[in-house]
Every structure is written in structure tokens, then in C-alpha cells.
Amino acid sequence: MIDYPAARAVALVVQTGSFEKAAAALNVTPSAVSQRVKQLEERLGAVLVERGTPCTATEKGEWLCRHMDHVGLLERELTAHLPGLVDPAAPVPRVTLAIAANADSLGTWFLAAASAFTRGCDHLLNIIIDDQDHTAGWLRRGRVLAAVTSLEKPIQGCRVTALGALRYHATASPDFMARHFPGGVTADALAQAPALTFNQKDRLQHDWIRRTLGRDVVLPTHWLPSTQGFVDGALAGMGWGMNPAQLVRGHLDAGHLVELTPGAVLDVPLFWQVSRLAADQLADLSRRVVATAKRELIQRA
Image (tube, rainbow, N blue to C red; front, side, top):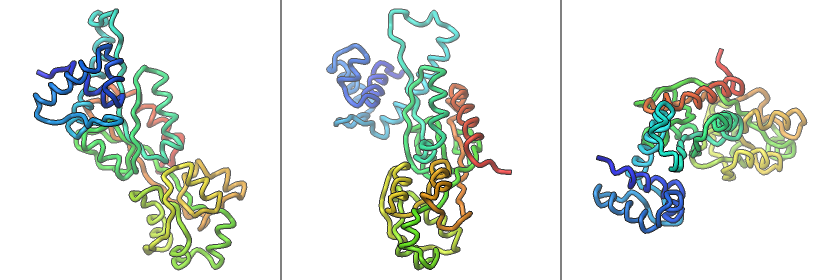
């Protein structure tokens, strides 16, 4: 049988980042939490928590934490139907749901759906940020319950819903265009003009070049891991980048930014994948994500 008090101690240490904070949440001493975690690790023959500042979960610890997320959802659903199971003197534990999304979705439309969901329940969200081509990996590894992803094929054990496409414009300041593209946007010019790249996983600039010019170009780039920073960097003439339409529409209309090639947009299809084990419990979140996406993203004909 699973030692749920010990498993909950592990989950709270990971969630809060320390044994002391987990102890405060459980209303026990830090040494009691440490003992519970240590005994469970010894029983399993595996380290569950990487001790540090903050404490983090190992791969096996992540599996246990996600299991506790599922248990928390099921317990809340059960006690809603059978309130007599709840000790009225005991504090009601809050359920933290781990979900993954790409930074550009979070910076444009996803937060509206997430905040609407949290206003209707007392669940907490742990939103993991990763590239849209890589958020599916978090689902495969069981580290999140749902994800916004570019992967259309259902991940094993998940349900998938098409959300629409996030539209990107290749933008730069008029001054940057005058300095780097006086003769037009060519492969040779792009090979000299600094781009803005989110991180090593970001392929949007290369995808846009391949679609627009029909070839690959090796780009000089500034590394800028911030959605809003991309817009600010482009406005400041630091480089050119792929910016979501929602964030640059006003700047394009005002002439503060211009498109490298007018009308050459890049639409990135997005999908909502949710674990079947938690799909029913996350039905309200899924409804809000899909409804918000229908309003904010480009819909296929």
C-alpha cells in the first residue's frame, strides 16, 4: 500500500521548495517531514527529492508528485459528493495542477483561460514554460496533466483538441530595416542582420525564412528568453524577430515596427492535450482553454 502521508510530504517539499515550508503546511516539525521522506525513499530504494535551495524532485519523485495531483483531484471530487468524509476541523488541502504551455501563448491568450478557471475553483496552477514543440515531452514523462503543444497526434493516454493557430509576424524597427535591409530582405542580408531568438529550441525564425525564401540561412542572433522582450528588442532596433500578432498589431499600425516581408506571416497550429486520467476533473479548464483559443487564435477554414 502507498504511504500517503509520506507521499504528501514529498509533494509538499517539492511544491514549496523546502522541508521547513512543507512542515508548516502539514503542521508538523521539519524533522517529521524529513523522516517521512527518508523512510519512503528507503522503502523504494530511490531518491525522490534532490536536497538543495530550492528542493526539487528527481524523475521518480516527479512521478510520485503527479500521482498525488491525481489523488488530490479525485479526493476533491469524492468529497464534493460525500462531504461527511471530510474532517471539519482539518484544513482543506489545495490541489496544485501542473500544466505546460509555450511562453508566447502565456503572453498572449492562455493566461485569460487559466485565470478564468482559477476564479471558479480553489485549485492552484503550476504552469511549466517550454517551446510549443517540446511541451508534449512533459506529458509523455508524466510531469504535467495537460499541455498546449504543436503536436497534433495524440500522446499515449491523452485526449487532443485543436485550438487554432498563433500567428507570427517577422518584425523590426524602421531604423533596423534601413540599416540592415537597404536592398531588400535577401538571404545574404539575413545572414548579417542580427535576429532575436528565445532559446536553442526556438526555430520560428528559421521556419519563417525557409517558408519565405525557400532555403535555410545561418543567422547571427541575440538570445532573449522573454516574449515581451522580443517586442521591446525589436522596437529598440536590437534585432528582428517573430512576434505574436496580438503583441505587435498596435506597433505595426503606428509604424513603430514594420514587417520584413509584408504579408509573409507564420501560423503555428496549437493543440490542447490532456491526460485521460484527469480529463474529467480538468473539464472546466479544457472548456475555458478551448473557448479562449477560439476567440484569440486563427481558426482553420
